[in-house]
Image 1 (cartoon, one colour):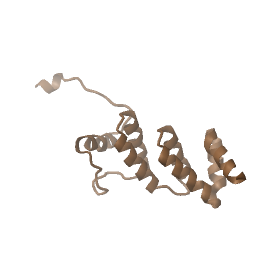
Image 2 (tube, rainbow, N blue to C red; image 1 turned 60 degrees about the horizontal axis):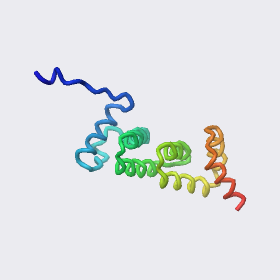
Image 3 (cartoon, rainbow, N blue to C red; image 1 turned 120 degrees about the vertical axis):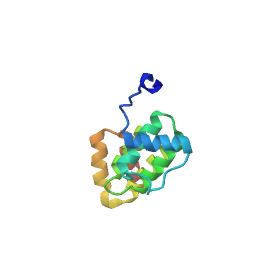
Image 4 (tube, rainbow, N blue to C red; image 1 turned 45 degrees about the vertical axis):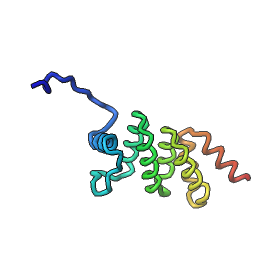
Amino acid sequence: MSEATIPCITLHEITPATFKVMLRFIYTDEWPGEDRLEDSSAEMFQDLLAAADRYALDRLKVICAQKLWEKVSVDTVATTLGWAETYNCQELKNKCIDFFVVEENFKDHVHRWLCATGSEFPINYCRAQKEG
């Protein structure tokens, strides 16, 4: 009966699926296998990255950044760069910048996205790479 009197904590910034993976990681310090994840999409890793940053789970943050990098493509690199910049994942950010600097076929696509978001560092970096 004491369970009925225990106050409930509501976390608005995290989905139940993300919380479940995060909580399991906190207790086991292990990443669940892909077969145990309900959702292994980039969106899940983005949500986990945000939660790991919010709750100062540095090891989980590194793992999420690695998982996001594994899913990087021409279509996702700009969004992934935004997440890396938002949550201070320097290695992921550097990999994303290197990825779109090398790949000539979609530089303009990424450049347009960066201009739309107002992110100055990557734009200046790309210009320096073109000129240098």
